[in-house]
Length: 85
Image 1 (cartoon, rainbow, N blue to C red):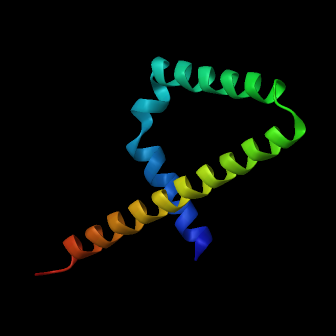
Image 2: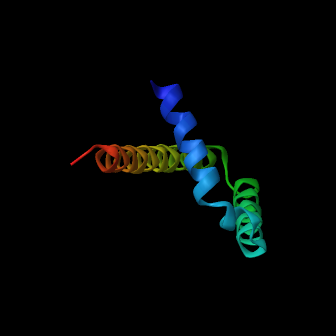
């Protein structure tokens, strides 16, 4: 079930957000953020790096849960709209 949900999320994002991915400003902001993280990682001690990685993993998990929730809501609305009244 998770594989199906992951596939649906990817397809929805690909279809709904091509504007962001094609936009130069989005790419520049993405690159800038990556450069800042790289600089930060290079200037942290071992323990600080571990905390940063834990924070990034927690942020990624929250983002994943949020996307899954939005996808489930979108699917539920789509199914409800497709059903005859």
